[in-house]
Image (cartoon, rainbow over all chains, first blue to last red; front, side):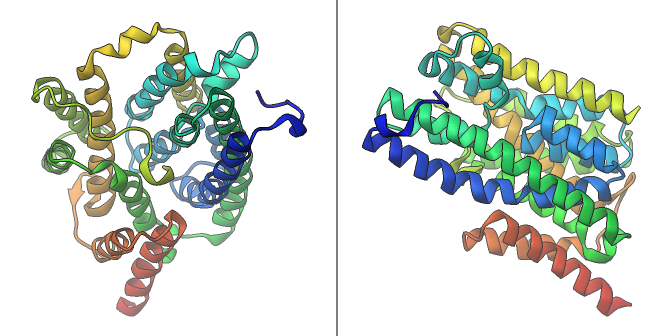
Length: 240
Length: 101
């Protein structure tokens, strides 16, 4: 639990706090890139902050501004962000019985259920350390991610034409960095390749935002029909 | 319209998170569900990489973004942190564009 007095902490809990901080700081810092990319995509500073505060899931946020920035329909942006957030639901199933959050803490735990908090939490050896790891990472990322989103949005706003600074390429690189740790395993690699081919093949023929959703459909079909091997990747390997 | 989409998408994302905390554990016992969800993440991110790198509106276009993405891939292979990867890609694209005038 978050507010427990420090002296009662076990060595495992102290280790969990150290891990949480070492994950939360770099993760929070890249909120700068989200803030800058979001205003480059045409959102204002307030809208950018709303995404970091309310949506609070890096992949979904980058995807949302990506679809909006490329002129996609709002509904396509909502659908893409929702689908990318689907994994958070699975993380919730994993961490809920470990956290046993009740009352107002339950929706708070839900909002803080992201790649990083799940990865640090579930990596701990004891129940107390799991809770410490989850809450410290979740709260730490939330505070830093929002702070640095604001920094990035204000900076991005002052910069002007985003392509002069290569911010369009930065958006592509951000997606690649989110994808990279998930590419372990043949099935994941085949899915990624098929998704790119389908999305690019459809681009000239359908409205913006739809090619990305079509790629999700391809992934569902592959995931549902592929042989019954266990999923290769859990929550954000490499802290994402 | 953008505000409506932001609020709707945020509500959807929160509902998914909360649902995960409320459904019974055995729901995950079906390995297909977990596998499909992780592949959907992979598929969406890969499609976004493709679309962000080589499309402009409804056209497929090759420009400074492609070499920038190659630089990002090399940085990722060398285990560079996220901010460095993104920064190198931006610098590559900005540099190439400055050179091209």
